[in-house]
Amino acid sequence: AAGVIQSPRHLIKEKRETATLKCYPIPRHDTVYWYQQGPGQDPQFLISFYEKMQSDKGSIPDRFSAQQFSDYHSELNMSSLELGDSALYFCASSLGASGRTDTQYFGPGTRLTVL
Amino acid sequence: AQKVTQAQTEISVVEKEDVTLDCVYETRDTTYYLFWYKQPPSGELVFLIRRNSFDEQNEISGRYSWNFQKSTSSFNFTITASQVVDSAVYFCALTPTTDSWGKLQFGAGTQVVVTP
Image 1 (cartoon, rainbow over the protein chains, first blue to last red):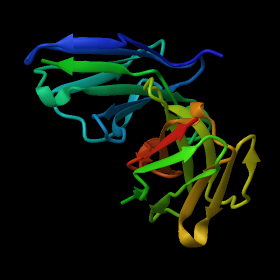
Image 2: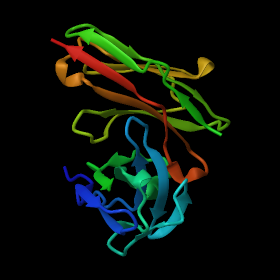
Image 3: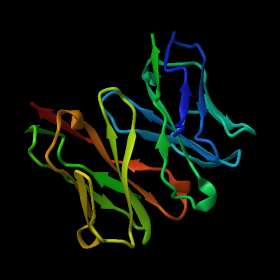
């Protein structure tokens, strides 16, 4: 079965640079979530989209923005990168139409390292 | 506010032993979902099980079983006859069925180490 696709899998950036992470949800899934997982920590919710509209927002820095496109893929844009942004970034998708609590399936993650 | 507590930071067992992971949660929502996810050393998050707050029936799926007790706000997870491939971090998570659009609140995770 098709899974959530994230690209790139690894990304190395310098401080103050920008980064764009991409997420392709499972086919027919209309809801996308972004999470950030620091070393040795649990995943923290950043932001979610349902039918291309932002549906919820967590502790996402103002330097980050995201959107969901007409084909339901999503991009997380990160600017003015800081050392503390180094983390594993997960995208998850679910079928939101049937209810907001459908199971979230996670992609493999993008490991961002800021030097 | 919601909170998920996994008091066990690490559990080490020898292959074929059973492993029980504890999860205690706090929520003011009357309806919610509980999940267990597995994160192996390769890093991905793998969905294992989901249980809604209306259904306290405990089940077994292969080597996995879970014990949901609403009265004590606990959602424990057991791996029977553990294998080396079960070595991973296991996360318990909670999401309400209203508001929050399903964002997951994770516990801190429990590292399971299974040695041959």
